[in-house]
Image (cartoon, rainbow over all chains, first blue to last red; front, side):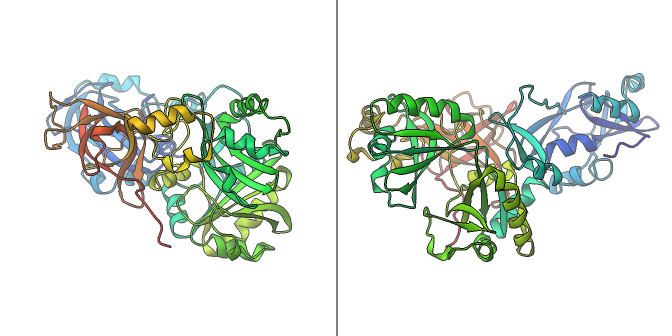
Length: 128
Length: 385
């Protein structure tokens, strides 16, 4: 399983890629593997909306279950991955690439310190 | 994302556990058993069964041998379907009912000899069913019930290529085994009961064999079917396949609080055969008409109706997302999944009989929204013969 070293990870299996004051958010390789075939991603947000840390920001439907998406950081929504509407399988195929979910402008960068490094996330998964 | 947690209780394993591990299966808890959910992906395995073939390990199912001069009168009293119609080497689907008409389990009953039957029960219900069988058998003298679940393995080979894959390995002419018939025979040199049954909506065979021989049978079947695209298939695909086929699953569509008439299984209740457990209660249900009916659900949007979601009446024209103060709860979803064959989300659920109208629009509460769905008749999928 692949967990890139340049990302930050949440206990609810989201990842965050920070570029300047922007953060891209998706779900981890472990999470997509646990879900199995993703058939639909619903993120009822629009650019400009404020998202708070730990807030539910959407649902992900796989063949076997529905799971909630939880915001790992607070921010203003800048962009949503429109490609997922037609190609939800990208979440399975490229969880850290084209399967990303949204980009936010960080409103509280200090929250990043509460997230795990790849190493910590791997240890966290082993303890599950 | 919310985390999933593994069950803590020790789980039972089938004789094919090592095969599943070697194939890299994702194992899950199911009815007290550690079973393969999927090997590659549920969608891929589902499509393989619809277009080619899939091999399932269903050894967790229970098998009871019921024999003796009173085996038939006993079974006739025990279940609502007419066991007396069975020829030797024929099988019957039936429910097993309480005196209230509630469903204890759903079963397959095979007549193997004049006075010897095999009853196949759901894994989670083995202990409960066995106790019920033994309790009811006390009214009958000459009947013996033996639990063969431990020493019996069951493999299901399902899909349009099933016969072509199995024939070269089988010592019997499979074309002579009709639907819901069986025949003892050997497969890959191993003694089996070969049955033309299954729960996927496809043609296929179920092979009962001794537990110790199951690994070899499994390996030989997978090897023989490789060229025709046979893949191992897990419980995930089994569930989406049976849902498309409109088959009930115990614990979802069938429980001790549901009766076979509301579950769309009136065809398995034979009032004219004489007395059986639950007859009085089911007669009353028939006279009054069931209060609710099991219906198919087709979502208008792509969200998936899952078991337990509430179904609301829709007198707002079925507009998705509308709050509708005049909406009334009229039912509950029992199963749901995205349908790989229909490419839409489908489900089954109980709906008040008066509102159980095909094409009627309802709304299903998913999270904090109510989304439009259409009631439809079952099944969603019927194979072309």
